[in-house]
Length: 83
Length: 407
Image (cartoon, rainbow over all chains, first blue to last red; front, side, top):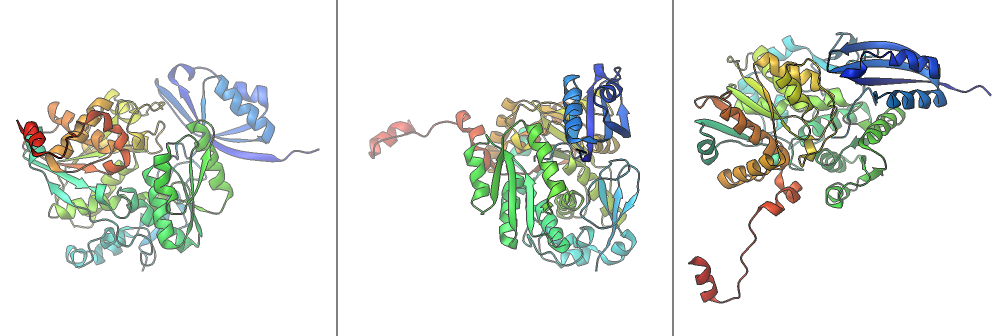
């Protein structure tokens, strides 16, 4: 059965020490979720990348879990909405 | 008549129509309201403003609504108080408190942003208002939606204290507690906002909502005799309020309503949640998100949406950021109450605590004018001070017992 392809827009936050690792590339190799980088800002303390992802719901869940396992925070583009 | 051109991306300056949108499709940057300033300048004069009712809507040309205000028509124009005892305590000659702890109807500055958001939501034809909140925003959305005849949904972490939920439930809002971490609650709310056609005030209505904050500073400038103070001290949660201070000053200057500029804008956070202040003090361009741990719950946003822009606004104005411990927050709340008779919530303790610190550091000079923004009421966060106050003296109904106390 063909699964629906969904799109998600997220911000990834990399702690300073993680910015040297090719984590997005590794995610693609593991989960096969297509990605498109929309903006990126990285300095020695923190990296912030806006990413558009495309895949099945299951692949997406795997990709988010993989990012978190590698120490990268995954958040919706609205960032914190609880005020 | 409307003075709004549309929305514009704050990052790439791409134009968008006047719709319930909040993020740029291309760069994910936040969208901001774009006005027809030359037309506003022709219409908005000091005299015209002064002739209007004392509410936040007296500056309506600079707010993103097309028709008349329909929600929160009485909001704003809170007192600007020139302090005596507090100024003496801090060693300052000219210290003011802008007191939004008495804002109408729910005693916080959130009534300003919600009034604009819901007026706009009705213009868009929304029937349901929603937000994700742990306190002031929830109260304000629930109350203003009720008065406007709208339904409201409020999303909260499932384990929030019952006292805080009461002030929202009383207005008939549907309150939904979400199990999971704060990150989970944030994620789910963004998903709900994307799926349901509701006015989620701080998500899809955010560009309009945030504009309401400017009125706090328009009022301050008018109350100072159409001028700016040397220093403004502002609490920072998402950082939005601070960026709107800079925008309000810029707009008033552009409209010719003030001539003086040079106001330094300082940001205040609690040490237990100070991503923006830490970045300013470290000279960083970006901030590092944190896990909040502070009694100042209304400022406990670990990954603030407008943090980057707040850092830039402080830097451009020559301002600074500081943070204070929970102990300093309580001390500042007591100082304000005992010197000026104003009971503020913990966020007010943060702002005043930081103002005091900036004076001690010499960043605020003794002869300079200072406005400290108090944005919420102490009656909402009584648990923060309850263990720090003296207990009442209990006596029998006998005069000699009272005389004994007086000795």
